[in-house]
Amino acid sequence: MSDESFGNVFDLSGSVCAVIGATGTLGGAIARGLAGHGARVAVIGRSADRGEARASEIRSAGGQCVFVKADAGDRASLEAAVATLEGELGECDVLVSAAGGNSPRASVTEDQVMSELPLDAWRDNFDTNLVSGALLPAQVFGHAMVERGREGRPASIINIASVASHIPVSRGVAYSAAKAAVVNLSMFLAREWAPSNVRVNTITPGFFPAEQNKALLFNEDGTPTPRAQQILGHTPAGRFGEPDELIGAAVFLASHRASRFVTGTDLRVDGGFLATTI
Image (cartoon, rainbow, N blue to C red; front, side, top):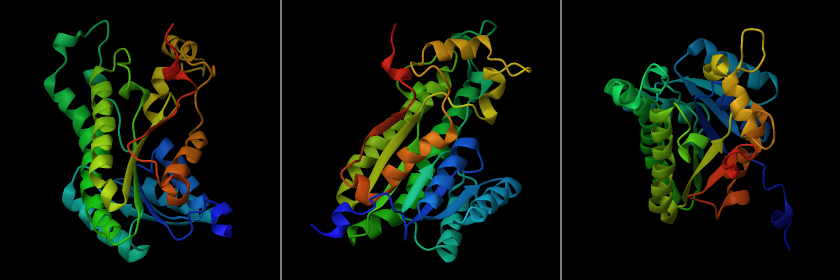
């Protein structure tokens, strides 16, 4: 057997990875992890201050990283980002779409029932989580990936889903539906682009404390809210996830040597949340 057969299949040296939403908690952890395994990483987001800070943090840890400003919901902005990225780091091999979020206006609560949810809030959720969070980035980055894949250069697209993709988590009805669409779209793209050597998979995180859900999970004194206690009671691991616990899944799916026959798959990192019924 050659050394390549038993070498470090998680070594991403030579790869260029774009992480959309890397200014956030989970996307930031993934960007750090990819850089830590040798990839040249582009942090892509709308906030220059947060993006430059994230890129600087990764460089300080010894990684190769640049910030590229872009709006994931705007095709022209993404196309400009691709051009900038290629000029700074080279052609993109791995795309991670980690942008997303939930609008409380599209949540079922004691004060707002399903029939009263405003349509524009539904559309906002689908624009944020499906269009910006998976569709447009895959279209823009995927076009070049498919062309290069036909010439023998493999690529990987990783979309970030949610446990709400698989079961309708109470209250977050529009978010759940939009994230379910992300999984479905990813499977469709996996089938379409497999002959072109482009793999498309999703990672489904369980509940990870982040900026967007901090108020939902914790009281001002740091104790868990009743909602958090409900979530933890449904999670066999008995705790929330830590951002760095997503790194292994992302590196695995990013590495062609580690996962070259893996496409159309959803990799759950949820502490057993989706394995629990009653």
